[in-house]
Image (cartoon, rainbow, N blue to C red; front, side):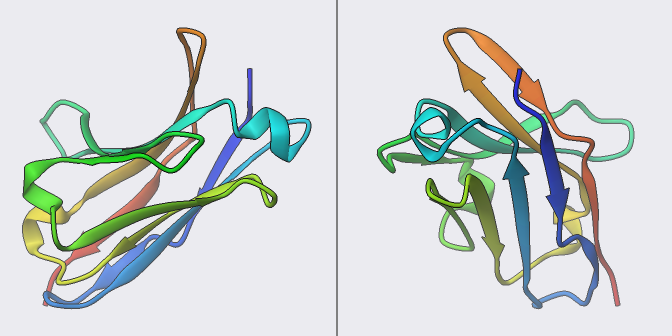
Length: 118
C-alpha cells in the first residue's frame, strides 16, 4: 500500500482558486507511474464522488461538474499529483481526498478541507 498526504486546502471566496497537492510514498518514480491517481470529494451528508483521475501516462477524466474549471496533473519523478481548481463555487465545498489505484487495490489519503464562501 502507498501512503498519501494531501495539502493545499483552505478557505477561498467564490471565483477564487486553490491548488491541492498529494505526495505519495511510492518506492520510486517508476513505481509511482504504475498508479492511476485520483481526486475525490465528499460534502457533508453526501457520498464521496470522483472529481478527476489521471493515469500514469497522463490520460485524464473529469466529473462533468468540474470540466473546464479543474485540472489534474502529476509529476512522476516527484511522486506527486495535483489538482488546480479555478472559478471555485460554494458547491465545491467538501473534503478532498487523494486516491491511488494499482492492480485493483486502492489507497486513500486523510483528506483536506476546501471551503468556498464569501
